[in-house]
Image (cartoon, rainbow, N blue to C red):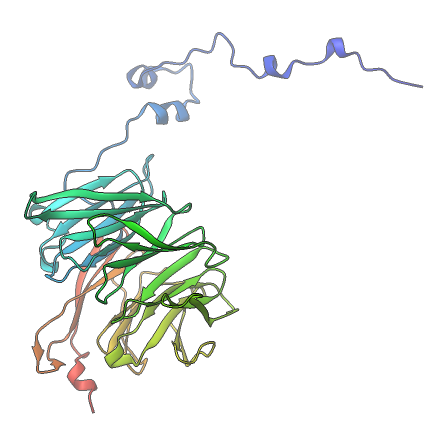
Amino acid sequence: MTMRMDYSKRVDMISAYAVPVSYRPPETLPELAKCTDYPNTNSLQYRLTEAVPLVDKQLPPFLDLATVNGTGGVIVAGNNYTSRVWEGAFCAWDNVEEVADTEKAIFSKRCDAIITALCFTKDDELFLLGNDKGSIELWSTGNAVRGIGLYMVDNRYEHIGAITALEIFNGSERTVISGSMDGCIKLWDYSEGDLHSSMTFQQAHIGAITSVATDCSRDSLAVSCSIDRSALLWDFREPKPAVALYESHDAAFTTIRWCEEANWNRLVAVGDEAGRVHFIDTRQPNVLLETVPCFDRKVHRISFHRKHFAVLGNTPEVKFFDDKSKQIHVESSATNYVRDIIWNEGKKDGEMDASPLSCTLIGWDSYMKRITIESANTAADTE
């Protein structure tokens, strides 16, 4: 027996699920607050509520990045991940001792995007900023012609994905390297007063780039790492500049730093999602010279200061090590992730730093803390 559908009786889904003509909820917040006829209006209330603007010279609660120039000036950047509008902001101070004092902030700026990378250039009055829209911005804090004041010099949208890494070269040229979520690496020249893209390497990694680092003294050398579990060594003087620094690791690489020449003999430190820090000699690729277990979650940042280094992860703890990879201190005063570190230079006695190891930590929940590790004196490390 054959059944036939009576399409004249089918339901018109558009009409069935359309908003009824009689549904007229209040259109203002005061009316909505007094109305009991339309109880399920959370989304409407959210749309009608305006975002609360940041107070002038006040950072969002999620402090993510810090950078220091040659004169000791500090810029701290934070983001807001919990409000209806995700946004970033940065503030600057003349020195690290004034950080967090809003009355002593010399300038501040709100951004309509999440700030993902930040670094000063070789010129103390210029700094670079990257965001999650793929934009790289060159900012100036003032010059002889315009005087003191914050203004944008240039803004470039040449990355498809969010900027994940920015680093300047420390040689004679004014060059910066950037990496992004699209796996692309670019070199930028800022010597002529703007940003000029000089080299582009599409799909330098097959996954998102998580970090880049440059040689401490030369323009041509850099390293990069990615969630594709590889790290690359770059020599931009060569026609094919990239060679494998380490391939097919057992976990994604999350951060990379080029150690200082004098104290670390051209080693590269790379962190991974398993919470380990590995040391690799650039002259001997694909060999892990040493592995230092740090956390049970991913390493977020590695920071070197003379003969010591600190490791930050997706954890409230910060671990400090000496040049023999011996743990000398664990700072656990934070209640949320610690994201960056500002080292205090201290006073020097000859070639040895005679002051205790000290730094300022920043992190989420507006965490800022200056710590001093009295036992970590570089003079005590010498034989």
